Picture 1 (cartoon, rainbow, N blue to C red):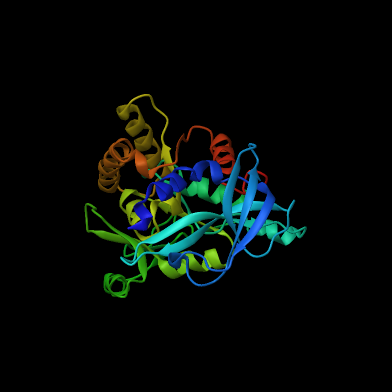
Picture 2: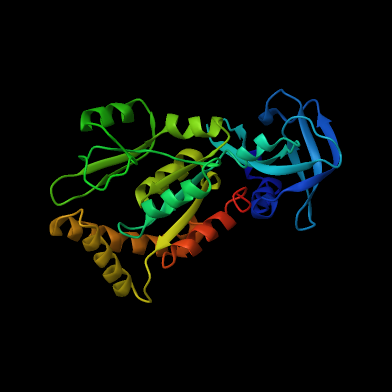
Length: 304
C-alpha cells in the first residue's frame, strides 16, 4: 500500500514540528494530484515556520507569496480499506478579525482523568477564557440526573442509547460499572462534527474507554489529549486526594465513592499503560497554572 511507504512515514513523523504558523515562500498548483487525493487541483506551498524550518504543505484556498498561514488538521484521503488519513494543511490568514474564531478546526481536545480530578472545573474555566474558540461536547448517558450536574450531560434511556449505537451515530461509547447498575456513556458524531463545521474546537471530558473510542473513530492524530492527575507523589497519595475531593463534593453515597475509587485506580494505571494516547500530562494542583498550560499547548489558544 502506498500509505505505508517510507515517504509517508516520514511525513507523519514531522507533524509536531508542522503545527506552527508560517509565511508562504513559494506556491504551485498540482492540476492532477496523485489518485488517492481525489481529482481536484491542490495548491502546494513552501512555508517557513515560526521556528525557521521550512516545509512543503497543502494550502487551503488561494494564497500569495509572503502571506501568513496557520496549521489546520485536514482529511487527506480515504484508503481502499476505508482508513481515514489526516495531514497538516495550512489556512491563509486574511486581515479579518473574524478568522481568529477559526484557529485550528479538525481535531478534538480531550481532558481525561479519574473522577474528582477536576475535569469539569477545568473545562468550564477553559470555556470562560476561550469561549469563541472552543465548545464543550455533551456526554450522552443512561444514568439518572444528579445534583451537581451542570449541563454537560444528555440523558437518554438504555434503549435509545442502544438504538443510536446501532445507527453508528456514536463515535465512542463506554459502559462504566457501578455498585447499583451499569451506566452507558458516549459522544454523538453529529455533535462533534457540527462544532468542526463552525471552525471551532470540540472539547470532551472523557475517560479511558471513550478516549480509545475517539482515537479509533477519528484517528490518534485527530485527538489532542491531556491526562489530568491529582496531586501526590505516590499512587496512594493521589487516591487519597481524590477520596477527599469526592467526599467534599457531597454528590455521592459512600458506595458510589468506593466504585469511583476503583475506577480511579484503573485510570491511573491506564496512564502508565497507554502513554501513547496522551500528548500532555498535567497535575491539577493550581487551576490557573493548568488552564495556562492547556492554552499554551493548544494551537490557536495561546493568544486567546
